[in-house]
Length: 415
Ligand code: C5P
Image (tube, helix red, strand yellow):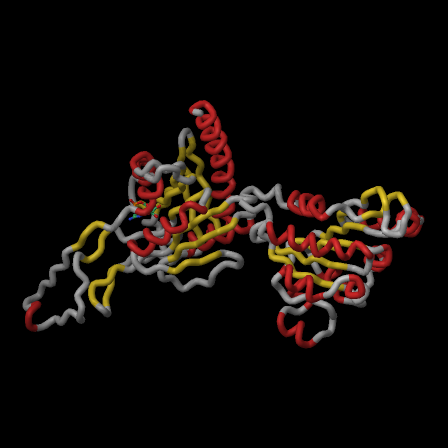
């Protein structure tokens, strides 16, 4: 798994000789899966061309605060909100001074003021400039405000001096940037979620389905993104917007969902089956609309149904299954049936919910569930599906780590 998958990084480049190293930096960040938007100051363009940075970041480079064309694409406030982190490398003495002074007279300083994302600087300047008491005061002021400093390094400088002020190596800057995200509970993990109901065609105009709205699965996908995961959401037909950064694949029938899940399963660490998959589908799909008259005479129309594949059981049945979480929507004996389902389908965890309660059932905004696992029965009190999802993922993350450690031990004993 790439350490920076899904992460949005604004890379600010200011005008110092180390700006040539920013090209390397952008390449490394991209290799680890980050989505990088480069912002260059005027002085930075004297050292390296925006074209180089554009080619390496695969995104347009942002140069001016009041460029109408650029603002139409992504305005400065949008960019400030978009960023998970603003990394300025190299950060010159002048840039540090302007940031410490609260200036907002160019795009990069404006972004730094507007953002709520962490700001990291990789200072780069002559050793005398770094040692200067004003720079040191600016450094202290920035640290005080929560700005992180990566470096500077000590050693030979472009001007011939030796001392502190070299920009850290791009690899080290990337490593330090990745470390910012390691506290995310699903950082670096790939999660697949199935959501919504499936539709099983009867004829060209009719289908069998269920009341699933997809809200729970979508809330889980969103919470997994928040927790640092890369998320694939396989969704039946629903009326919901795709959460940001989620890769959504739409399907219609259970068999489509089964196919898509298995096509992408080798890229999955945690599988969460939240979809209400139709257990049966019509044995034959009529080519033309079934008419209520003539050949289908009488008051009865008989439909023959056949079993659909059990998607989640087929996932746990693979040679090297991911960590699998199932849902058990029941109307009575909720915990008993859920525990039974867990054993039968070989799930790592099962989330039991009582769909007989209309306030927490299909289509509702809130949910109340009990998470069941080996020696685990943890009720999650009634709350919005978003809050329930966050709590659920805390349990999932904890159990996943235990499970993975156990698997690694077993593998090393077996080898
Ligand atoms: O057996 P039951 O449908 O109650 O099991 C529910 C769990 O199994 C859910 O996690 C659901 O997404 C999954 N399931 C599935 N494929 C099916 C039926 C259910 O993945 N055909």
